[in-house]
Length: 129
Image (tube, rainbow, N blue to C red; front, top):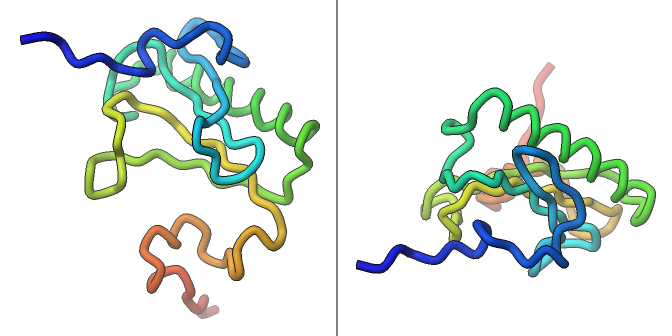
């Protein structure tokens, strides 16, 4: 049986916008908003629970670096950072990747609840004090 080809394991060097010893960054091919970036570990793993401590630090370092770049270039009003784990959560590529999604005022009718919006009827909630 032939091994499955992973689109993230051997990226075209021309699409890499930053890298370190443990991960690389690229713009998302199907961006949610301008400046949507993926942070992808070099090692083929499926979940963040498989990361070594060094890989975890490498990913967060790139997230920080890419946030600064996106702030300077696109001037977003906020960010969502997310990982889809498993088919039920929307994961379509079996290689871990972290989304850095810039958010802009007015890009959605009501951003309240942020990532809770993956289940629309759970997005709007009241906070009791």
